[in-house]
Length: 229
Ligand SMILES: [Zn+2]
Image (cartoon, rainbow, N blue to C red; front, side, top):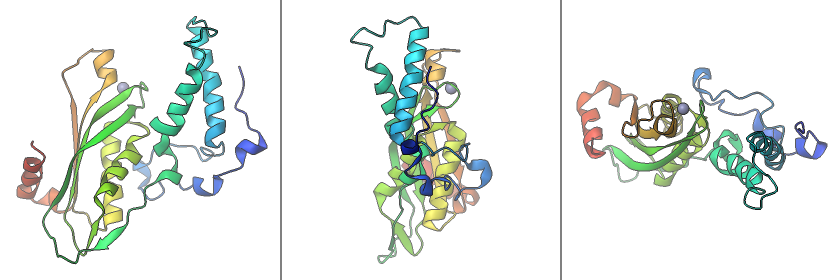
């Protein structure tokens, strides 16, 4: 089996952006990454993962010369690097632009039912659900799609739902410049559904209430009512 192809070409690239992974977050909220996490560029990672995944399939006894299976290692590797785990790379961290709150909108803004697709870091199978986020605008408001993009950035990593919830809340607090942020995630974990306890009806809810959402029970109730809880 090949070792990681640490060619000069592979090592070149985006190392300048790299070391910056999650440094905006408190240490205990950062996704555990090694300092050399981005020494390989995406193409080199796809190449390496392809080789390793082919090995897994071979160990399972699959005939890799079958034309239905031959392309699978590369498809899986591309899916990991370019889609499922894209959010590991700080180069893809969404830039959250703020706009002046000219119309003095002061009520809660809720973005609900944000599609959430993540991956359980204990079993490497999908976590599928919805995220609901809210904030109280001050002098600034944010473009709505940025709320979805922040959710997606942190979801597209190997995750546990508790850390995901807190990462999204912390990022929003910092980029919106307010602690008045609420995040609620409801999700199904394929590792619970398809193995172990094999429970297909339970789901997992996690929430983080910052600032006024933590202090004001009525505000929290209003948020829950608006998202249909
Ligand atoms: Zn799991």
